[in-house]
Length: 459
Image 1 (cartoon, rainbow, N blue to C red):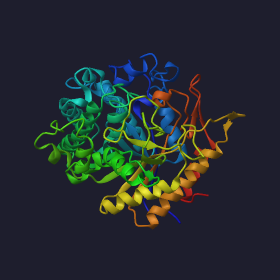
Image 2: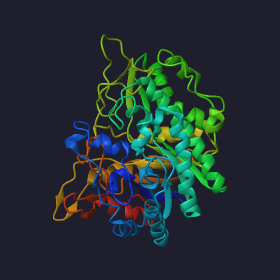
Image 3: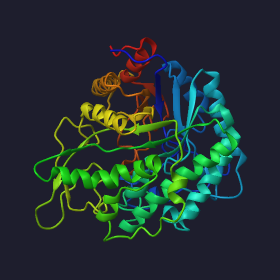
Image 4: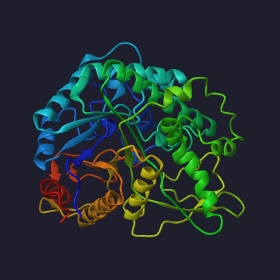
């Protein structure tokens, strides 16, 4: 099996995870700056203050991408670098950085894919309520328009949001991501206002770029039902994990069962007239991030349901309306994140999205694995990561064979980086970063991927 003509092989990163320079050239704090500097919130107290120092090493990193032969690079724009106070005054130095990035990609024959929100909300907006209030969605649309005007048609695809489920439910429900709140109502409010932000931003971008190619990236979950209650458990999780975004964005309506599941938390009165029409904007491609699957059933015991869902192990539950679902221990093999390796889950997910939305092209916008890499004689022989990637690319090929219109695949991540609450303890990169010296070392997986890109064959 091969890949279709024009298939895009790329890699991805996120601003706070790689850029560093958090207090330079006018950038102001994001929720992740504040969260990571709060004792006990990240492993070892790690922060993104320096990360991969990408802000200062832009040309080196662009050359690195070119050496791998990447067709495209998916990066994110840091909102507090461009509009430091969330709304109002624009920071030209911040825009200039992304303009240099985009120009540098184009000069090297690499297609720029821009994500406007990968979780670094300006802290000043969080102080006003963050994603629990609709004014944040309105500010996001204004920011999106600023970036669209500045970078114009040099960007191939505009992705509004990355993984709004994580932003809403890990940030406002479980508290393991910034801003660290543990309020079920706030999580549902945040989910709605992120949906609204997507729709308003899509309109704002198209107001200045009528032919813009628009996308959104969702981390859609794959649930494996176990036993007689498994199907009901999976339904509840699917409602609050997947359809809470797919419904409004692609169909113009929330799933009715979600309202029933969460009736004890909210009456959803924060959804105002016109919101769903605003959210339901046409997009050109849907981005799908995939890493692992979950085994689920309803909990039939006393106390709190065990939750082996791979989301940070906080005490608070990120699944409002599905608190009675038990996540069973994952069967191996596992990555260094404790996530199971299940390539079939990727095929199943891509096919299921295609069956529900047959006319919507897809891209795998993140897939990869963390393993405890070892440097030997200046090299990293990461056979596990190469095997992981090969098997997931094969799973994507199988989905294509089954009729999925899959346009591309972005390996996560280009480089080792700040892995959110896990700090620098988890390495996802196909390029190793020595955080003491900032030396970049392409791992064996990077060399394998470069050959895949060159030949179109998985080897």
